[in-house]
Image (cartoon, rainbow, N blue to C red; front, side):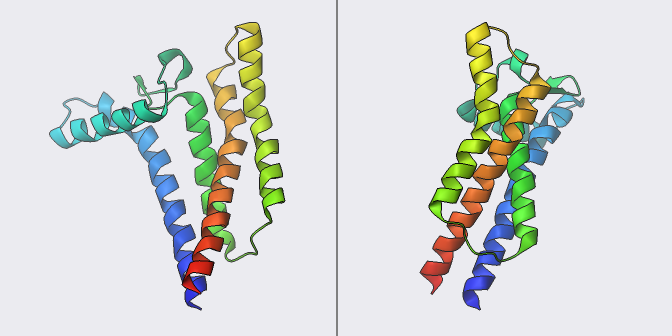
Length: 163
């Protein structure tokens, strides 16, 4: 019983964090575009863009702009995080399920990586950058599967540790 409680709360917390992160990525440019900018807003936007700089190249031509301001991550990263948020919520809502074996997880990851890899290969081989919307859309499956794997593996680990 305790094992199920811990696993359920862990999935819900992970989903909440994934949704909050994705929401912040969209909200920060909106906040930054508002004038006058308050001190807390300056701190929050600086923190988000700082974290974004650590995890993403933030090239303007590869990024979405919201309210005329560049998002803290590129379009592909935004797609990854959107996929992760959607999958985390779906897993949290489904409840307790048997964790798939590692071979299934590996296969799912490989299949989900194909669309993102295809955009990279296309870009590197032609020198033409796919549209940002396409880069984001094709990254959604990879972000979703990664979130699914993290949720499944962490739930299985938590269940073993609590027992």
